[in-house]
Structures are given as structure tokens and as C-alpha cells.
Length: 284
Image (cartoon, rainbow, N blue to C red; front, top):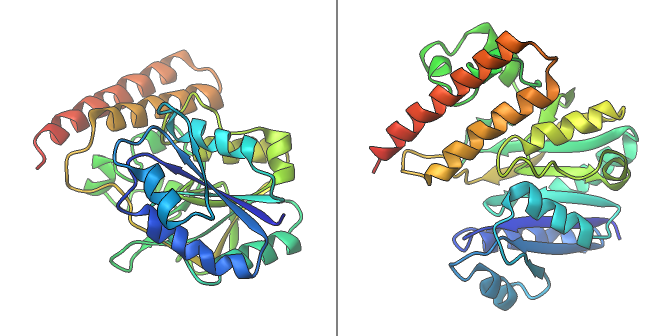
């Protein structure tokens, strides 16, 4: 089998059918299976998928395992030569799967390939980035400091914002919203680290691939539309806490021990989380 698609859902009724329908075009060109791993949705997502996309296989975890846990459950149940890890709020472009497969065949040391991800307003999501340094935890995509000083050198390096994202290149990591992953690389590097409940598991996974000598490539000829969940509306406080807990886990796991710098990162990230929780409480 050419491809296994793993879509992890949690209360994803609003978007999941558009996501699955976008995959149907690729079923003519590739032999593929689609696995929808549901993390205990309460909105009827599994039943909706069974009714409207019966060709997809639904795996109900019985609990919210987080994104990494859901992906790993899908990996264990899949059999494709490659795995497409896909968010349920993504719509895959008509030729994207064929482009991914061709790229992998032409680049045998590539473990992960990511597409150009488009926002609903037509802008390009900066979904291919450098590994985060200590400074990147202050100057990251949603940081207040990045918003105040968008052209600062740390944000530009981390987000690769000086590059137009119009040409293919090897990068450190690509967004887990959509990543085509080689099975042989997964067998070497293992699955996602389930210590990340959500966020940062994608950069960590790409880091593991690089540690085993594989490359991660960005290929803009493949396009995906992403109805990203981040907005001006209130989100569950757990989302904010888990994002920042993941930042700390990544830093401790991948940076050389430096007691003072580690303490500074933990304090700053924790304070940032508290500020975001406060701001979130006042959103509509």
C-alpha cells in the first residue's frame, strides 16, 4: 500500500468531512487507507465519519490521548509505505499527494515532507521553520515580542520569514498540520513523543528524524488549506497550558544543560502562559 492517512479528531465535526473529501481525489492515483483516530469527541464526529465517509476507518481511543498519542495509535494500526499525518481542519490540494510521493521517490534520504500551507485569507502560513533556540521561546510566532518587533533577528531566523516560501528546500521542521512521513524513517526514529499533549510534538519528531540522518523538506508545489484553530475567540485554558508545557519539555529535552538559562526559560515561558491565560479570559 502506498499511503496511510492518519487524521486525529477531537470534536472536529465542523471540518472533518471537507478534509476527508479532499483525500478522495488522491485515492484514484494511490493505493491508500484513511484512519480517523478519534480522541473521545462529544460532538458525534465518529458517527458522522462512518455515515458520510464509510471508506475511512474510525478508531475510537476512548479517551483524549492528545495529538501525539492519537497519531501514534494511527501509526500502529496503519500499513502504508508512507504516512500522511493530517489535521482534520486541512483541505488537501488536488495534486498534493502525487507531488509528495514523487518528491519522496526522488529524495531517498528525506523522512518528512511538508506542503505550502495556505490560510483561508490567502496568506501563506509560515509552517517550515528552524529548530527553536532559547530566544525562539520569547520571539516565536504568537509572541507579544514578535508582534511588537516583527523584524527582530530571532523571529526571522526561527520563522524563516526572510524566505518567500515559494521554492523547495530542506528545513529543520515542518508543521504537523500536514506532513508526509516515510515509514522507514518512523521505524528508525519511533513515533511522536507522547509527553507532548498538543503542540511541539511535530518539531520534536522532525528533530528525532534529523538525529538519525534524515532530512525534512518543504515542497510548495503541494498545497494545503488550513482552517487553523487559533483566533481571537476564547480557547480552552488547557490548550494554553499544554502549549507552554510543551515548550518547556522541548527545551529541557534538546538543549545542553545550563542551570541558569534553563531556569530563565522556565520562568519566562511560565509567565507568558499566565499572561495568555489572563488575556484569554477576557476574549469573547
